[in-house]
Length: 459
View 1 (tube, one colour):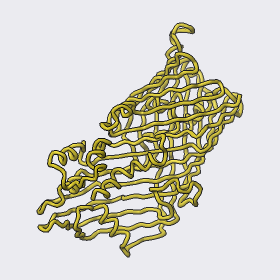
View 2 (tube, helix red, strand yellow):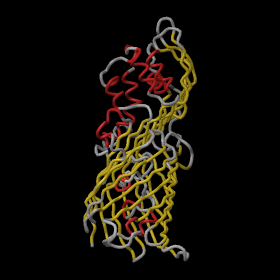
View 3 (cartoon, helix red, strand yellow):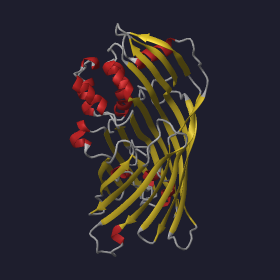
View 4 (cartoon, one colour):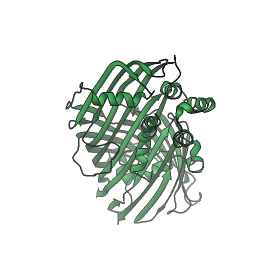
């Protein structure tokens, strides 16, 4: 029982930490370390590599240097609206059987759910290779290779109640709303940003596009998971279950780094579109649509369903049903299917505040950004709640950016971001987190993130 709950509620999320120890991204570009430090308010200000996956139009905003390279930037984000590290360390890490917990601890676990369904989400990405090249005075092209993992789960509170009270004879449990989805893939992106003719009320206008070839390496999904169960006088569990799961058996989702160059189990295409512009010398705007596309899984596909009565000695529904599915003869193997990418629309503005007061008046440089982000496309467990964020980047000297910001919305509430960097003429180094408080009081928080990246510019 404890192993089952740990597997589905914790391992699904922490597998991304194991894969990338530096530490989502909330549907954003996890390798955009500058944007991470500004709470993801960078759709109007991200430049260079940061524009890829955020707003490709901003590739037209030329940085210094004719060519630049990334040095393996990495980013990770883990988020849950009901499960904290404190709960994990107190009730799961100690290996205490959940059925044997005191009543007060059981209630503490159940009260951690803010609603009838708890949601957890994890993303991690590493940029294996990246290069930008200046084509002309008004445009840049970029090529990147990213390796990422995305996972999410909806866990019903009723399932937690089953694990805690499942041995009480006569108890009834109606588990509805279970959903799990996870995949990992490599993405090759060719991006282009170019200045465009602009109306007179704009200072400049730019458009951009990214074309993506995606190689999928692992996939798992529980699309329908429900159960109506009763505890019998002898303590066993009996009732009906309805389950539909599909996965790719070629590669294990739990070991994404075993072989970086294994044969893909699926292929897909994606598209990013962006538009940005400037009003005067201090105000810019940006809008983008990213991750429009899907992956077609065709190799090693397994799809199984269950709609029957189950009797088990332990209230371990996930483990029992999965064992039943694996041993079932009702297997539809080899049937290809398509999964949508987690699409996102972003709209935002950025203001260079120091330019409002005239040259030499404001000490340093101060950038202010606002952004609204929303999932697009087919709703799934990987979809994100709307997010509103605002951020600041202050440079007391040109080579030392200090960043912070606040994001509001999403399922886990508000977060305070922080980041800094050392930005020189030919070299950048940046570090950031989207929730600085978890570094000091991590046991009480259900989110955690960190990102680090370097880049080299050829002048």
